[in-house]
Each structure stands twice: as C-alpha cells, then as structure tokens.
Image 1 (cartoon, helix red, strand yellow):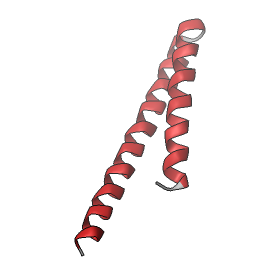
Image 2 (cartoon, helix red, strand yellow):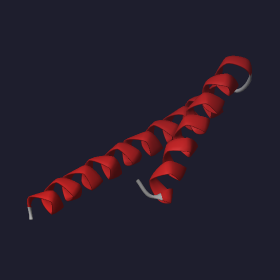
Image 3 (tube, helix red, strand yellow):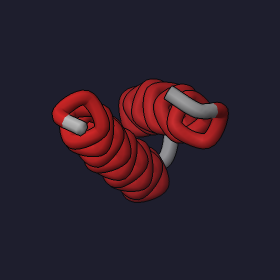
Length: 62
C-alpha cells in the first residue's frame, strides 16, 4: 500500500465524517456533497487496493 492510497483513504474518511457532521448541524446540501466526495474517494481507494492485490497475485505466480 503506497502513500497515495493511504492519503485517499484518510481523505475519504474525513470527508465523509465532516460531511455527516455538517449535514446534521448546518447546511444540508454542503454536507451531502462532502459525503459524496468522501464516498468517491473511498471507491477510488478500494479500486487501488484491488489493483495492487491483482498485481501482487500475478507477480507471485511468476
């Protein structure tokens, strides 16, 4: 797992949590938008993890 994947993971979690807090306490539209951005970053993280696992698997086969 490289630094970019970890950064996306953290950004996704912070974005989603911040969006949930803002949606609950302040502007609902901005909060929902931040939650969507957080989820997109989480999907990108999962995509990178899947690609890394696939590459690792193909490297192990020889």
